[in-house]
Image (cartoon, rainbow over all chains, first blue to last red; front, side):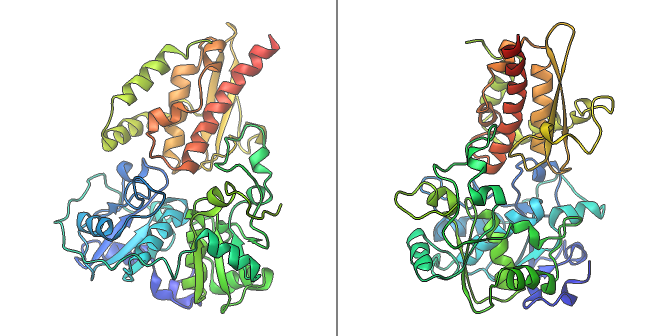
Length: 287
Length: 149
């Protein structure tokens, strides 16, 4: 894959290469953060010096369905030894799907010194780079977070209802079988956490992983991404777009692609996603 | 209703007593290291595999086979195509070591929610569903044979 800077992204600074990470392992101003779906991966071996941020235990409120609050984020930041000036670099399994999710939550608190390692864990491993099992301990820091701001990059159910009334674009990033509702009724599938199958009316189906080169987990070039989201699906950079999936994790990946790599100004992630919409009484559904 | 296989019940008990997340992970990683022992041999199947052997909902691309044994029990084999699918590998090893060669009634009694007892309730919905899919397939193979009998 070509160098990150040569792929035509609107904000190339938000991606770093595995080489860049390898050169900054001991940089005190950089913290490498692994976020995975598979809870066994980090303890089985991780980039030297990397800390783990777990989406369930670190990023969510333990009681309500919501993200951590300001005090919780400050505790998390202190635990992983970052200050407001530390550049955080996320990477993980599943082509960085969980890494972009953690990145998105960090943006709710305005930590904009944040990057994604292109290719994630897959590329690092494929390149035969070092993985270690030692869990680093960093001196706890003082971190002052702003209050969580849900107004810019997060969408709620009622906002989605108004969005569809205004016929604004939505991107459903789930698989075609989830989008059509077929999967909910397939024999042998565990239930999908929703009472109804289908999609939000008007949503376009662009499975999240289409943005990725599957052989090494890197992001496709800007031209390739525009071919998918713009030429094929008709989105435009000045559109007001909402992305969703089942709980907002896969759609954070698409949010990242649209907002940073293609430079869309108004993209929000609907984290309630299908587990909220497919269980809500009276909301419209299309199949 | 039949009891689940004894070895599986013991293992679930062991995991229930683990409260430390890291300890649980270490234990599961040790189990996943034995995956080569349960990987499907070429005489049973070679890639590309029959899609009917694919575990529904498992994003680690797990596959399950069940071979009938002379004593009427089943020997299970697995493959996990995603090299990063460590949890799926651990689940496969657990199911082979505790369910292969066990009475079909007892394997058929294994419920998918043992995944939560083994991996902990904080496992993601997607990951949990994939792992439960492996259990469902193992259980389903036993049920199929019982229905035929």
